Image: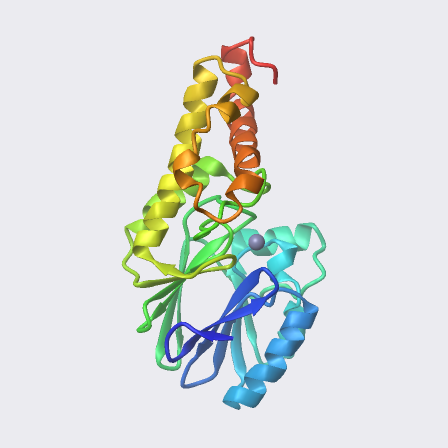
Length: 264
Ligand SMILES: [Zn+2]
């Protein structure tokens, strides 16, 4: 566990991060991650803070962040998610506890001396993926659809690229000082802006390439993301990022019907 502020901690298990908020009344967690991580977290929180876990929030529906909820489903903790996250967990018979409290657009949770605002900005990655803002610490926590210091994952599996663009635009209009992601680095608002520039450049350059009649390989060879080569996993994933953007744009906007020369 790493301090973000005096009362907000980032909990790390492998390549994953969760959020721990220490309030006057107890502990609020965002994401149990998995059974091992959740068991470790439950024991550590008990030993370190001697307070109950009052709330567990699922950031979204994906099993690699939402599993382990059973560990906290002991009758003392309120489980919360966006309605779409709960619906997906239920639909796919996820092996984790279902939330008892859901919301549509935004939920404000007053927990002890903290105020947490959960906001849904539309489809981004997974189902019902929400941003969590903690006051007065002024920490924003987002999982998967904002990634600092590293490229988005491989071929953008699970991403809605256009949704992620508009959600990140809206997120940047909100005030926040510190940013914690479910993967990769912590940062501030300027770092989130830099991430936005990355996905905007990815989207725009791939779309321009498709509309100019270029193949995926030609777009990759033109190295449209070269300005971002200092990001972690650039060499490994940049062509996969371009491929993911290409496949989404061609399929969702039916660009093949506009341009029969496209191979897919
Ligand atoms: Zn993830």
